[in-house]
Length: 305
Ligand code: PSU
Ligand code: MN
Image 1 (cartoon, helix red, strand yellow):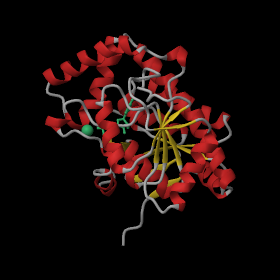
Image 2 (tube, rainbow, N blue to C red):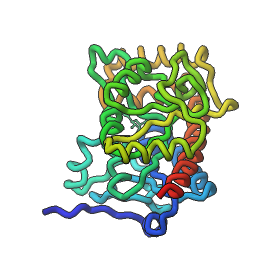
Image 3 (cartoon, rainbow, N blue to C red):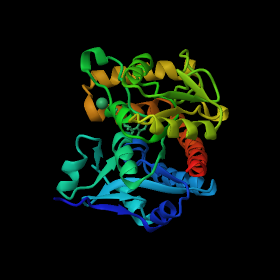
């Protein structure tokens, strides 16, 4: 029997042991979601935000075949500068680890690792979903399935507007995943606070979200919750402004034949270029905002135990 090469950092281990709040963080956002050096600055700022809110950050990645939960400063820096790092989801995590490889974890892979380590809350920017044109391409992120089977509450800024949001909501409903908008009735759309879609559920406090997470477990239901936290007002790019840019980026992806795993990183980079960096500023602001809410939810979870 293979034993799992799982390295939980001393800081994360002691927080878990003491029952203090811990927030999981993904690494694909560092390697594939943001350019250097903002990726490293943001990764550090996210960790600092979680710490300032009284919780322990646990950034997750596969390094030299080991599943690392809580990265050291040097590991974080190496990952942020590394080129050609694998983007790992449920399907490819084990193969990468068995080969002794290094890879960044997506939302799906980070949820798996967080659950193995005993972490119930995970904060990130955006999840994967149903891509536009999925009726032809069948491109539906494994993040959605993961939310239906792994009991981690994921805080994101709604689904990214590069996705087909109505279809993403439909799939999540089919899979039995609660999609909970934080503090508003409409579904936030990543760079924009609102959208034309009503969110299926709404919560107005971290305590409410923590109680719902525990109630799911009490019901014996597998899977987690998706918390859709609107981007801070001062950082948002209004829908009318970002919409044509997304359309243009999507066309460019098609014209260049970009599909599969490469699609999300391509679109993010193209939107970054077309907005002259504004999309990145917004992305950073919303991730930090999610890290704060994640820490607050993790705090409430510890009070319920
Ligand atoms: N959204 C972002 N930045 C990201 C991602 C999503 O704004 O970096 C990453 C996350 O790791 C997410 C992944 O899990 O993209 C989804 O990729 P795919 O669509 O290939 O499943
Ligand atoms: Mn995909």
